[in-house]
Length: 615
Ligand code: F6R
Image 1 (cartoon, rainbow, N blue to C red):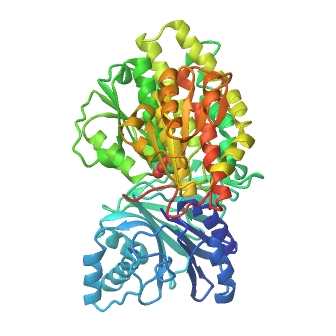
Image 2: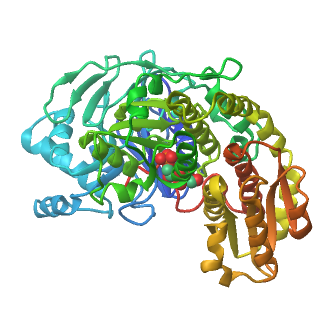
Image 3: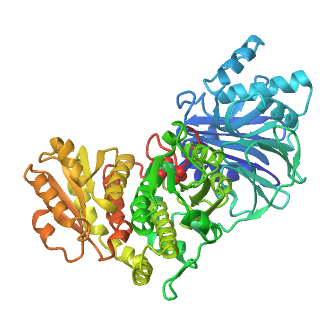
């Protein structure tokens, strides 16, 4: 939900900020803009559209020289995506300029007050209200920018990561956060500001992650000063050394990040269990689980909260946990959970799953669960993210940066982590036998190679994509562990190709969706041999007799379904519980190729953003 970037130091700031904006475009791409201090004045250029549109336009508009700049890439909340609503926003005097990720919820009364005091607004945004509020405080209370920001933010309800600077004091940028991420890159006599570390990783590995309700003054040639917004107390900033490298955030020869990330899955899954699972020794060790093993083992139930693809991983985990550990599991949309007065007790373990670690609804669900005394465990991909810091303990997925907006490797690595946890608990509780435990470990060990093998079906999947690329509806069916995979397959297709798709448990089809089936309707059926196979075969027959087209994902060597399906895609043989790690792959590829063939923007689908930091 919007990306923010800033630079102050000895380099030309514009190229740094522009490159940073391109890296953060996954967070929103409705509009883009920059403000540069050229030594005398603030120069501002912004436009509806993508960063490349800004790049093309800026040369005709302003000179881009200067060593202080801020930039923004927007996912629209208040005000339609147009040039005027794009960030940065000036204050009325033109002296202050701001970028903002988040929502100021009480912007209307604040705006009215400012209008009453003579302020004029040009955009429909909440952000323009904030910058004028800061200006108003600064003038009326005769305080410096940092103090004015602090006073203004104490009047604000909502979420924000902001960066603001003052033309009259161009040696500093003031930043603050509440609910939206903000990280400061600390270089040699230079500082970077960004929504995540990707914009500055080639310049420095040292970063300060601001916590909620903190602000910082980032001043040329000085140490970063961090304070609590509420009570003005000074905070000793923790400078973290990042492990990220540039290669991880570039396309590496692939046409799209999504394809690169699909192909990274063998490595990503391996990285997820490397060092945690010693298959030969029969050991799983995960610090976050080991340190809290009694809480897990004695849990009355496990509650999983997440959104989107992460919620689908949670659903897979429900089947896995209940089967292996016999602990009751409930999976909730974080957005529903947080508002429905759920029953949570101190004996519940809550697992929050989030790739970005920034999803607002998931964060709110965590806070609610913590307030009721539950132990909250996070499964996140982004190291140092807000959720990873808010939870009581956790396990990272180690998938590496996921930049394509459609989640791929995050999903399979989330399932990997959750399966490891379930196996660990099952071993501890004695709910599976020693030999079963060893069998799962050795099969998990083989999964990266089997994912690699599954990826070999890419050309075949591409052929199928070509046949069905013009369909207007798709149905995805699966049972058991693969029901959530059907949901995930449908979501992938919807979000990047804009084809309507629904996922269902295969047996539910006859309770309604079967009415949709005719010769135009492709139905993707996940039909692994050990998962209610005969029942799924019957479901396929029911579709065939209504002339639906069957694309079946089957296990290698399957004979029965080959005879009745229009197309089959094979996955290598594995244990049923682990099949989601393989059956997901062809569905990701199918949606990818269809989207490419339909000329859709795969990595930046319309209306979406990678990290949903608003409700
Ligand atoms: C779909 C997708 C979204 C996210 C959802 C949660 O491909 O990416 O549905 O899964 O927005 O995001 P995280 O996992 O970052 O909390």
